[in-house]
Length: 331
Ligand SMILES: NC(=O)c1ccc[n+]([C@@H]2O[C@H](COP(=O)([O-])OP(=O)(O)OC[C@H]3O[C@@H](n4cnc5c(N)ncnc54)[C@H](OP(=O)(O)O)[C@@H]3O)[C@@H](O)[C@H]2O)c1
Image 1 (spheres, rainbow, N blue to C red):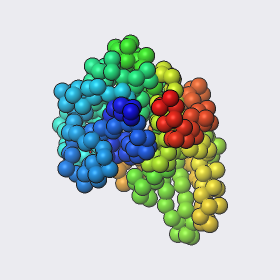
Image 2: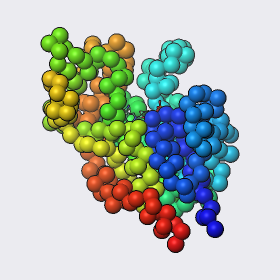
Image 3: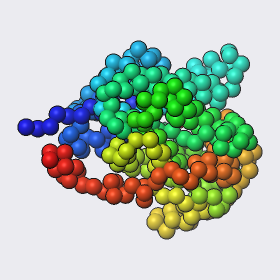
Image 4: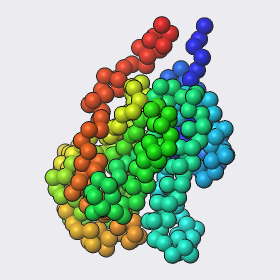
């Protein structure tokens, strides 16, 4: 008799992180995948549904929609998106009306959504497997830097609720949770064309951040590599912290490798925060990204906590072939 399928629920299934996780779990027949979106009729949601993913409507701003969406789950993967409330014009207008910066406004939205997720996951804690909740997060810049970097909102927001809020308010859930910090996406050069990555007049490619030439930065090809990482984490005991990255190297090394592979001339230049802000059309975006690389340069992207498990620490689980997992499950 075929084993009963486990239910994995994925927040952000139509996005980079959730989409990558869905694609990895799709290749394991032991799982039924349920993905959450605000708009099940979007082309992306319909494409996922056509692959066999159960798509349901839910809104991170409305905990009442999350509770039924998570009910009965064996495993839940969650991600929150700081950048949507940061960039959306109606959110910018709302922030101005409230008299707060759009950075702070997006922080508050993300924290609220994170709490909603935590509350709804806690409501189904009994159905979760031993390691049943995997939360995408980042390091807490304010705490790790002892207040020196106290405006790195898209880092602090995530760390405020994963692990912060969960550990403080839901001890049973905390015992079933793993936290995964995600490295800087290799696709992020597209976020602000010309700001920190551009072709020079001489035809070479220049990357420039307020980050020292030698500071190590975790780099992640989110769409292909996060899914296998999260899948591997789900096979491990709960309560651990991870850093998902394919390569951890400095920007100067990154550009050297890129040059070697593509044959293009490349270089890396350390610039000041002010220069990055000047180069960025959306100045507040320049400030948020600039703060991230100053923090990475001074403390480390992970806040200087070197205990997070990385790909090399879990490689044995990362490379277990699916057929072997199936055999183990059947036995
Ligand atoms: N860029 C980087 O280098 C980097 C590095 C590390 C971490 N991060 C973090 O990654 C996060 C973004 O992840 P991503 O790239 O996977 O995002 P993404 O591709 O932009 O997708 C966002 C996902 O979140 C869902 N979503 C957003 N608001 C929602 C709401 N109110 N209710 C339900 N679902 C909602 C969207 O679903 P629908 O639109 O279908 O509803 C979509 O699936 C950000 O918080 C960022 O800080 C980024």
